Amino acid sequence: MNTEEVSKTQFKAKALEFFRQVEASGKHVIVTDNGRPAIEVRRYKADERTPLERLRGSVIELIDPFEPVGEDDWEALS
Image (cartoon, rainbow, N blue to C red; front, top):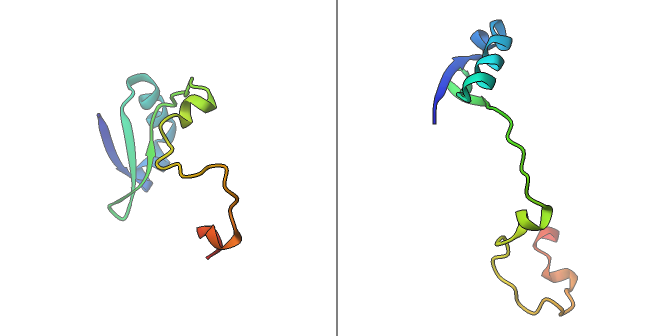
């Protein structure tokens, strides 16, 4: 993958130029803040899959899917 790193200051001064570069070449631009990566600018790629196709293969474990679930079983409530 082609990437280029620029500081926030450099990006601010030439943002439109970087956008055009990304569009034309597909090269990614990493914007850094104090030397650390903060933002990645890359060409948009539409996901043509249907929602069900995107979910396919995402279930890790399926145990008794028709059994009732109690409040104590939800990790999010902890």
